[in-house]
Amino acid sequence: MKTLSHKSFSKDGDNTMKQKYIPVRCFFYLFGMLVLAMGLILNIKAGLGSSAIMSVAYTISEGAGVNLGDMTFVIYCLFIAAQMIINGKDRNWLDLLQLPLSLVFTRFMNLFKAVIPYEHGYLPTDLLVLLAGIVLTGIGAAMTVDMQLIPNSGDGIVNSIARRCGRELGFTKNIFDCGCVAVSLLVGAFFGDPLLGIGLGTVISMLGVGRVVAAFNHLCKPAITRAAGLEKVVRK
Image (cartoon, rainbow, N blue to C red; front, side, top):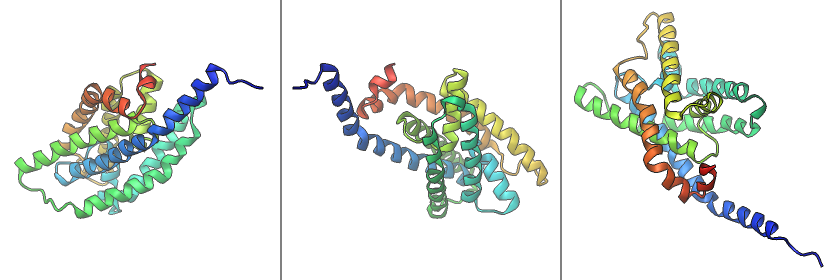
């Protein structure tokens, strides 16, 4: 009679534990995606310029008069292609699942843009809305990446760059945001207004979102990864 080794029992146990935590990971992941979508829209609703990660899509949508969600989806497709190149031999073809995810995500952006009634124009409340947007964007980005499922395309490319360069995620986010703002200025200049999609809110979010990601991971990542059964992976 064939006997099962301790190693076999251990492997089966690990698989069972992973399956047990899948619903928890999916919950944190989906919640993070909704938080991220709302944060990006609040940045725009503040009327002080879009968030840095959204600045290129927002500038093009304003200049060309196209739907923001549709333009964001196009930019996200470019981000996915860039990820595949950056990851090289380490690429995971499951990352292509970001395509349908990005389509759904940008539909939620359009929905939040339509249903959030805030009208900007009063600076104190505009700044509060901007602050809320920055905090939600950072938390949502961190949660989706931490669950190690399918990241939002904008955060997936930042994560790929961070791994390739061996740098901290929050720092890499800051640098990537600077690049997005630079491209947005060039695009805006093409439409006759370099500041078309850029404002005070863009500069603040460019500095703030990466710091929120870093702070959230420092304070909350151990707890949520433990709850999602990812603690051993994080400690490796």
